[in-house]
Image (cartoon, rainbow, N blue to C red; front, side, top):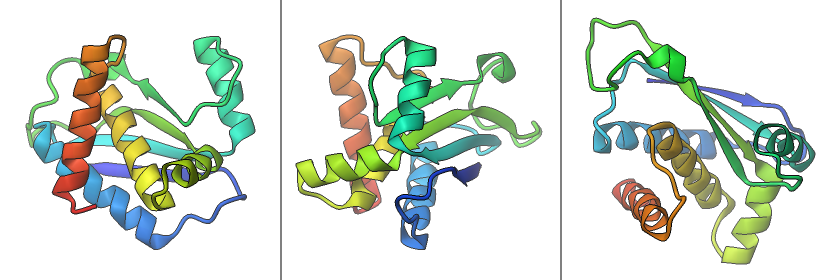
Length: 154
C-alpha cells in the first residue's frame, strides 16, 4: 500500500516519528481488515481554517472537525481483498487538522502522535466502510481503532 502524505499547513511540524507511526498503523490495519496491499491512500494535513471550509462544503457543518474521509467509490469496482495482479487503486483521501489534533491530545492527556494516529485509523476505517451513525456502530469503530493501536504497541 502506498500512503501519500501531503502537509498543507505550516503551524505544526510533522516528525519522522509520526510518519513512521502512521506507516506502521497502515500496515497493521491492512492485515487486520484483510485489505489488498494494492491500494493507495492520500493523507493531507491541514490547518483548522481549511478543515472547517471542507466540513462546510461537504457536510454542511460550519465548524472545524478533526478528520474527514473521502472514499473514491467509483474507483473500487469490487472487493478490497488481496489480489496481486491488480494495479494499485486509490482507496480515498483522509484530511486531518493538526491544530485540532493538538487541542484534542492536550485535552485527552496523551501525545500528539497518538492523537494523529487515532484520527488516521478512524479515517481509514471510514474508507473501509465503517460508520458511526448509531451507538453500536460508534462502539465498533472505536474498538477497531483501539485494537489496531494495541497491535502496534502504541
